[in-house]
Every structure is written in C-alpha cells, then in structure tokens.
Length: 385
Image (cartoon, rainbow, N blue to C red):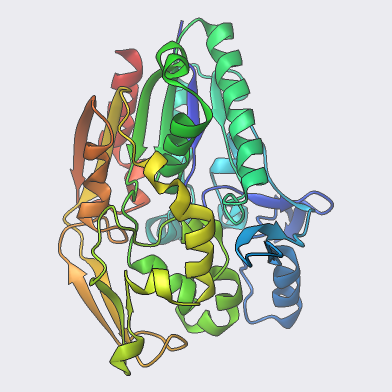
C-alpha cells in the first residue's frame, strides 16, 4: 500500500478565498480568486477590497499589554480546499488562462504553480487527492494566534491518524519553507514521540528557515512585499503577518550584534538586539507570540528527515536604508543561500534532527526548487523506499 502524502505549504503557499465570493471573471472565465494576492494594486476599488479582506488587529492582555492573539479579522477569508490539492497549487489562477508562453514566463519569474508539478508526479503514481494525497493549506497571516494554530494542529493530528489507519502505512510529509517550521512545532508541542514513531514515515523539509532571514526585517518594517514600489501600501499588512514574523532572524543563528537594517542614523539601525528592546510592532509580535516557543521548535527530534536545500545563490544578509519607511538603496549579500534564506538558517535543521539526509540542488531558488526534476525524482524515490 502506498504511503499517504501530506503537503504543508510555506508563507503565501496557501490559497485564501472569500467564502461568499470565491470566484472572479477573468477574460470570460470563472476563476478562483486568491484574495491575498492583489493583481490590481493601482486600482482604488481593488485596493480597498484587499485592505478589507486582509484587515486584522491585535488583542493585548489588559494587565501586561502583551500581545495575546489576533482580533477583528475578516472571517469570510479562509484557506481553500483543505485536504485536497487545489489550495496549494496554481496560486494565481488567472495566469492559467494566458497563452502558454506567458505562463512559462510567469512561472519562471513567480513560481505561481507552487506544488503543481509535485502533485502531477504523485497523481501519475496513482495518488488521489483527499485520500492518500492531502494538502493542508492554512491562514499564514494569523497562524501565530494560539487558537488558529491549535485548531490547525488538531486537524493535522486527526488527518494523519485517519490516513495511516486507512492506508496501512505511515505518512510521508513534504513541507516547504515556513511549513517546515510549523510541522516541527506540531511534532514538538502537540504530539509526543510515540505518535511520531507510530504515524510519521519521513519528514521532508525544503528550504526551511529555522534561523530566520534578514529579508523578513525588510518586509515587516518597510513593507516591501511582492511589489517593491508599493511598500507604503503594504506595510500595514506586512507588519502583522504571522508568516513574516515567524521568519524574522532569531538567536538560533544570529548574535545580538548582527545588524540587518543599517539606517542613516546608526543608533536606529536594526540588529538582533533591537528585537528585544524596540517597540516596532513586528518585534512585539515576535517576542510575545513566537519567541516563547522557539526552544520547543529547536528541540532535537528523532524522526527520519530529508533536508532539501537550494544553494549557490546570492542572498541578502543586510540592507541599507534612509529610515524604516524607505526602500533600501544598498544590499550586502551572502553568496550561499536560496536567494531569500541564508545558508546558515537553511542548514540549522542539521542541529534539530538526529536522523537526517541532506540533498543540495545548486542553482535553484527558494520556491523554484519545488519543480526541479531532481527534487521530483527524489520524492518518488523516498516514497518508494
């Protein structure tokens, strides 16, 4: 019997739709509307809708003022196709209605197909969505909320147990980026070693930033998202997003003196030390909702693991900007990473897992690696072991 496969996407790898209005019309086609991606940032109408869709606030303890959860969310926005595969592939459905040449160009640039090629390989191996091929999209905006996360972990536990019982084989987990951190958190905090021994066959982590990345400092403070010149529009959103906060640099890989954002007034520059003593909102969220759990996430674990890494890419390690509201004018680079995550963060998994194997795929990048022929070949090989 084939091992059931579980897919855990990274930041931005889950399609978020409106339950009331899941579709858009695009070139006379009815297409799913992934609400977290705004294809029309210069349109006042679409920008206002996007702000309403993505609106979220934070709830604080009335005595300590510590952040305890997210609040005032638009409850209409939900992850799409839980337990299937449509919520973790083809993240910009509009692109699939363009000409083939445009599709190839956009895939090579944005990798919008995400898990699509992996899913196709698994379908060719006679896997069935909802059955032995299970996608687990989640709301990466709010996954640091204890209630949101515990609900997701509960669903993970239930689906893992049910698929293992049904198919008579332990589950094979493939995670990307933030998804690797999230599943390790699940293994360390929500289940015990007996659960792991009984239900988990192998845990594949693709470009997982256990130590964080300086690029998250730029995204959370300045607001540089997927459209750099629109940073002032996106900063209200990026400063609160769990998926960005969870990938801020952390003490697993960085010293207090490490500087990530050099500012004109050097005393205001952002270093690892700033995270503990600065009142920028992203750092408050990090201190209150993520840092207290970091030791559990980093606790060594004995589970068969595969660390799949992109290497030999020029990767930002620090930025220079006039202030925290300005686009960086200079970047210092690490010459070995996946283009987004520095090498030392990608390889930190070797300190967390006792039973691991590393696969380096040079000249691939953070997301594009998911479609690389060698990656697809190795996934098939590992499943059949």
